Image: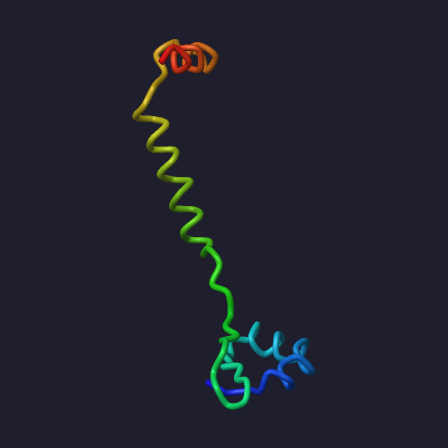
Amino acid sequence: MESIGSYEAKTHLPRLLERVKAGETFTITKHGVPVAMLIPVSGPRKEDIVEAIDQLKVFQREHQLNGLSIREMIEEGRRF
């Protein structure tokens, strides 16, 4: 992990962001003291999204409304 001063980070931010996008990590310092980290974002993986959709489909098959409408369920919930 590379350390970089805050002034240099501000001056070269677009270049640093490209390097972070490529997977690098930086520690930003102010007067030699670490104050922040610049790291890549780890978003949701495609596998996680596909797994969630599959789980929703299984849930939908196992749980039926048995003739109830969404409107009836909303009204039932308002009674309490």
